[in-house]
Image 1 (cartoon, rainbow, N blue to C red):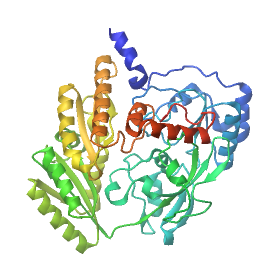
Image 2: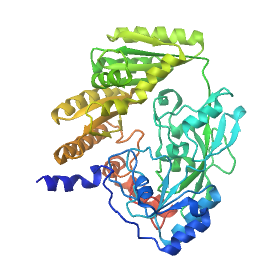
Image 3: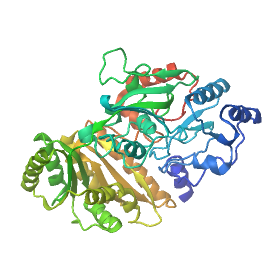
Length: 484
């Protein structure tokens, strides 16, 4: 029976240490030499350990390594690699930092992994236009370090120090999205190498306008495409002024309902909150232990406000009134940068704090988003479901836009528990759909949510996506097996 259960969960939840192929052999020696002729011998590897490293992300999807890994240094090399692979019928899998959570880099049909991390230049900075052009090897922390002397920053913050072009590919967001929007709102233009090697500039070469009514939104098509339509080799991003002043706070609530009600009331009062994060009592206990905090073990909001000193005083006063009205207490305000960084570091380390609750277990993160009017309903139901399914899990979320995650702790050697996790995740996704939400707020579809995507967009929606995919990638070689 245990073997049957293990087989049933193998494809989705086998931990990445178990690889689907142990040896490389799909590519001919001549093809590998052709790869080396394009990027140079030091930038091609068929070593098993390198391929395994590139066959998984941070998810629990089974490691499925490519047949070779290449590291191009410029867009011309990427174009040549795409033309070579496509002409020979070899799958192409783009790779950034490998920090995804939906198995998006698994080479389900083998092929060539194109690791773009060595294309790491900031190509063009236009402070007066609030824009910057970056290559795919530039991460969000590296960009903000580069920007720190010009009074600008890039606010989209998924937690991990991900590649900015990878963030565009997955449609990432994070803690600042309630104020500054997601990647979809902050990508102005993309340079994309299409499957056959042609280069596309989705908004026109060199353009960096904030709005346009010129034809189809090609930029929006590639944001969130998860590497299934082309390789993003540069992104033009919208920047924002660094706020004059910043203040952060935590506050505890007697119930989940009270915390979510406060969130809704703050937004309805038009308080321009920059961050508003929810952590349940299990998550707060884990953060206290892991990050040496001393917060109440209760449903908690982490908040941050940006603006002038005068504006912040008004925002803080209004927010305190709303929170106290909903039973909030144990306020802790952080104005100094070091103190704020400590709070948000604890929030960003929530994944590791959760893992520490069950040493030796692995983590699986859900990712649903619902209208904020239905948020308290689904959060309360989710808490009940965790108990009913006998699962250990924490809840953390970007509640200002209705997005939250369950971080489930799983014993990878317990096939019955793996089945319960899979069933719980599917039930949660369908519950979000029933409440007019989405099965993924920011992690993407990847391997695990393809059926839920069909249920979300319907048959006509899926047919339209397949037609778009077939037009741009008629041979189905761009990151095959993902999304569709």
